[in-house]
Length: 192
Image 1: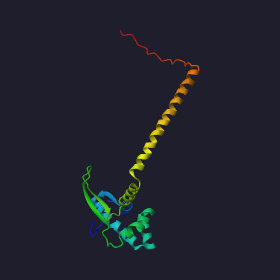
Image 2 (image 1 turned 90 degrees about the vertical axis):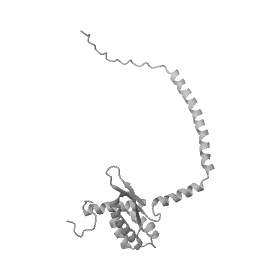
Image 3 (image 1 turned 180 degrees about the horizontal axis):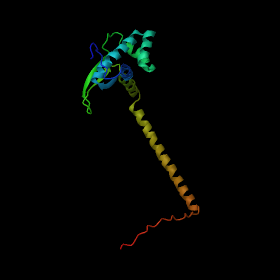
Image 4 (image 1 turned 135 degrees about the horizontal axis):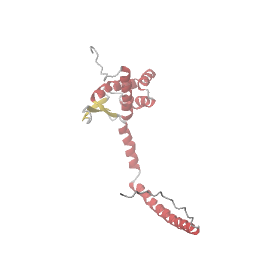
């Protein structure tokens, strides 16, 4: 019986559940959004929000507690350096769950869980790429392609004399005769 047990275990031991939630929280912190089943997303929400609250605390003790759960230095660093300042004024509700339908194989309800306010890596990664694209004009991109074409023509002209020289060398050398390969003949029995 499960009297007074409000946590979902997904038919796993507590250590397995904690390890699974740790891995999913790492992915959520580093990537910003992950796709999983709806019940797992609902359980993950509480674990992830507790980690972000620890990040907002910012003490050495909080960092050690986060490291004990996440077990990934890069995730802990991103949590305390990037995410915690972003959610400084927010009192909870750091994640959102978007339902995306059912999985084709087993018809399980699927959801996307993501960090709110564009805290994902995709939003941060898209901004520098857009800035780089604005800095390089289209003419500068077209110029290297034009320069590459004459080099290719020059390489083709260099290869042509080499091929001709190679064919002259083979013509000057006496042709070595190879011994003919003897093939076994199939014995056929006359039909009676």
